[in-house]
Image (cartoon, rainbow, N blue to C red):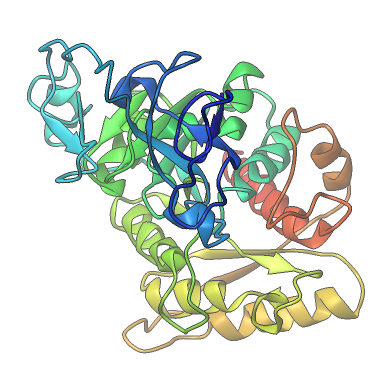
Length: 359
């Protein structure tokens, strides 16, 4: 729905500005009906435009906070006491797969083992379709669950990719963990989310990544992708097979993200304490030689990690065709498959490796 800057449907009376937006400006506003109700043409709405005015990618939308003149109906009392987006005005109450009121509570109460399930962990949400392309090209019948962490968008409904992948049959389930919400299954933590993916959703493979959006500050530790290392640790602790999908770029204008991103160097090289599989496609050329050298360097023991990561070279032949057949649009940091092939190829290689672990 198109709304003007003060949150009214466009009309001759819409003349006031809001915040830093010019008077009469029109913006796209996003409403989550489960939280604020269903906006209709002519409604006045209260908008949060802070990130939009700053031109940010993460949170860079006008967001409907409320419909002041038509409040939503009181949510029905039902099972579930997990509160997501806790202590914010729009906190959501959901039924967690792992909580006492859940039919799955007994299954998950003492669950402690993924049984060797491959768990592919990626930095960016945009890697998820590419991981699935590589995985399903090798194992078209694999049942895959996506565990969405809370480093980016919190509502799963914000992801067009997840909706498209579900519709195409590429994803069996979406599990929202931590403060993220709206998945087929809700979980308190990445650990319980992985166990729900395996034991409740029946996944053969899990893919873990934050929701759309990514927060970074250009510093070594100030970025949301640090959680990649923590998710790899979770997979290892639960006796899964942890697979790192490296963030790679051949087109990013920022030197710290070209080749293997500094995000992967920190999260995989420093935060991941158990040995994991670090995957690189076996592509020829100076760029990929450099990527392999960077990946080999971050595999070395570091700090409290005394065992090296396992550097895995994966056959790249056929991955371009698999990526081209993806049912959702491939886009990372505004670049499509042609604009940054390396980013998607690296993710697809991690997916192919996960498929091979099922053999």
